[in-house]
Length: 216
Image: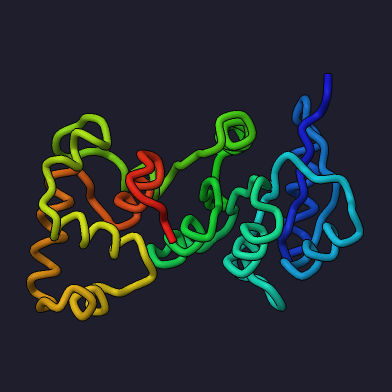
């Protein structure tokens, strides 16, 4: 049986080595290497090393961090699947990593069984979300297809939704839409309610999964 190959990119050597040991004990998996940051990963490709099935990528790293690494991968290795594995659980960082192309976002305290499941999902199906992101995606309102739910939105609400999936703050969105910050808050609450979302992270993931528009 062909083993699924992994490259770990993490500047915390002790954690990375422990992770390598864990993965090596999993049936059907093999770690190709441990790299300390995104710059080392670019050199990995430059030297035409074996392309892994999956990259496990930390977010906060020196020299070239997780977001910068994902942006480089999108431009130079667009088919490469990468899964964020980090301690950073703030909304802004999650959104940045997902927008940059990460196929999922895991916290380092994840249970080993869930970790293996997540790797399998990303390699075989292309995406996985859990933990904080899963909570963000839990519907509190109606359910349905992306197209059907989006039809319930006004043009202004769809415009807000697209801006919400960018790096803009809510105040920046108000400037772009030429409306007041209070009106942006109203759009946010209305869109969240109509789509059954709870957080901005949930909205970003929802739009990505339903391919409502290109996240850029």
